[in-house]
Amino acid sequence: MALYQTQATQQNLDRRTAARLEPEQIVRLAQSLPADDRLLLERRFADGLTVTEIARRSRRSETTIRKRIIRLTHRLASPEFRFTLMHQDKMPKSMRRTATLLFVQGRSMRETAELTRKTLHRIRCDRATLQTLARVQAVNED
Image (cartoon, rainbow, N blue to C red; front, side, top):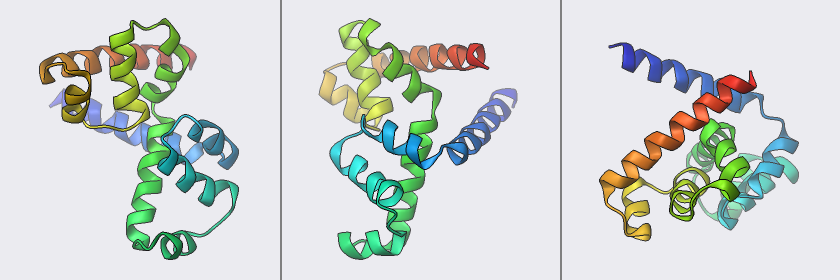
């Protein structure tokens, strides 16, 4: 029960943090994302296009575009994303690849396991380690 409450509290904190990112910060952080994700955020926050305009140009629904923008801004605001960008040059190569795939590119654990040729168990362990380190850093920054 306490673990669930802690996770729910952290998710609410991540949402509030994402809401506080300035458009300039979003565009700057988006430079680390894959091209499609970066372009979407640049259209919205640098070019000032509305979700409706982006949806029309990309031939996707407004809901799809809106949800994608929300997910991406949450990823940019996450402690894991910041930790990965700040420390990737200090990480062992295999951990760096895992962190980049999971927290920068937004890949699933299964995709990450396939791309790195690690077991799903190893990816879960690496993810837990990275999340812990990121949370400790976030607490120390505050």
